[in-house]
Amino acid sequence: MCLAIPGRVVEWIERDGLFARARVEFGGVGRDVNMQCTPDADVDDFVLVHAGIAISRVDADEAARILEALAELQLDEMDEPQDGREAAPPTRR
Amino acid sequence: MKYLDEYRDAAVCERLLGKIRARASRRWTLMEVCGGQTHGLLRWGIDDELAGIVELIHGPGCPVCVTPLESIDHAIELARRDDVVLTSFGDMLRVPGSAGSLQDARGVGAGVRIVYSPVDAVQLAARCPDKHIVFFAVGFETTTPATALAVRQADELGLTNFSLLVSHVRVQPAMELLAADEHCGVQGFLAAGHVCTVIGYEEFHAFARRFQLPVVVTGFEPVDLLAGILACVEQLESGRYTVDNQYSRSVRSVGNRDAIRLVDDVFEVCDRPWRGFGNVERGGLALRPQWRAFDAAVRFPRASLPVVEPPECRSGDVLAGRIKPPQCAAFGRSCTPDSPLGAPMVSSEGACAAYYRYANRRTSLDVTAGDDGVSNDVRAAT
Ligand code: SF4
Image 1 (cartoon, helix red, strand yellow):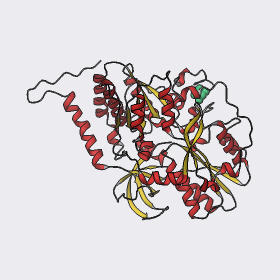
Image 2 (tube, chains in turn cyan, orange):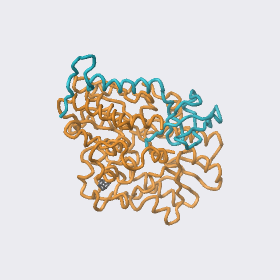
Image 3 (tube, protein in one colour):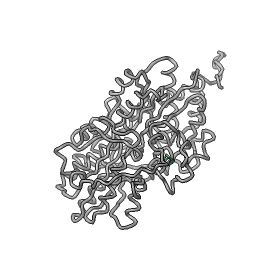
Image 4 (cartoon, helix red, strand yellow):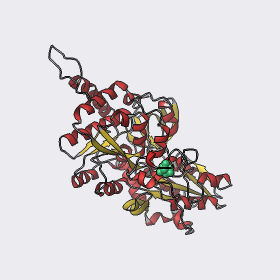
């Protein structure tokens, strides 16, 4: 029930108040979402939607930073040696 | 789909698994708090991949499962009234009460409607002025902003035929009970990413210090889950116990201030009985006095009939992490998703349902995991 799904803001319908709404697209499926808790979201931003309301704006820079760090995880720890250096062998059990 | 597919990348998962295996010098016991995380761990076989390295104890974060039987009986009672239509999330319908479920009641003519959002229940009330629409409000902090918004909207529309049967719960008091229990072997917590999206994680600093346990705010996709586990293992291996945020694309330390303000305006903290836990101090939210006109429990008090728990069901032990579902004698025998004895076999976040559903798949990490994939998740959520 705590599932929340990321969707892209396509268009604001109503900007203010308790009925603030935007059209949000989830992999091709569009739905009107209440935006009262994400007033700063712009068109093309992604929001996480739970039970019909957006509960956060996805931080695109932060997401990119973490994914990059995950990509580097490979280079640091377990990839082939580079520049002739010996990489530590991966310890697996 | 953006922000889902990247976090189901098999190569990244393999690297994270390798790193966890390399880092763990001994076996660690972690609890994932949220039932959505439990389903992810089992769906992608992460628990099996880490067998012997990280033991995962499933936490109480299934709101449907911890909803006390009294509340379910009360909801059924309301649905049977001629003047009431009871609305709730689909997950609530098949949860067994003392005598049957909401779905059974609907089968014999009770007014029960599934809604996707509490604000849809407000719209229904606006369209049906001759009926009283009750929304059965269950859920953790993730869901409370939507419910609070429904109350505010109903007020703004001047509706007098809308109310809430509130059974909202707060996750941290239950984590405190678990951490304080000397029989609970949990060494670190994966905190629920969407709860923290709303309330933030500042309150967890005192919790981590007090119990000397690491807390890692964790998401729901396989990469998120593995990154959360890795961060927790890193802390344990280096003897630290702080709060880490591994779901930073959605979670800020202060949470979502607009959502918190909305909830604070409508709800206040209260004690609440949880199924499996008994009374949890500060474990729930109730409508503030100025919103009592929207309280279905005040309008339609429950007839105090006795509640009847099925004796075979060990949902309390499952919810507190004392046993895993297959240790319940009824699991897969007298209790299946088609004829559930307890809520954890019904709910999409219940641990018993997760074990039943993924019993045959749980062999190795498979991020494409057969079934339904992203599109089904989207359908389920929208
Ligand atoms: S398997 Fe069924 S009877 Fe056993 S604890 Fe789970 S829900 Fe209850």
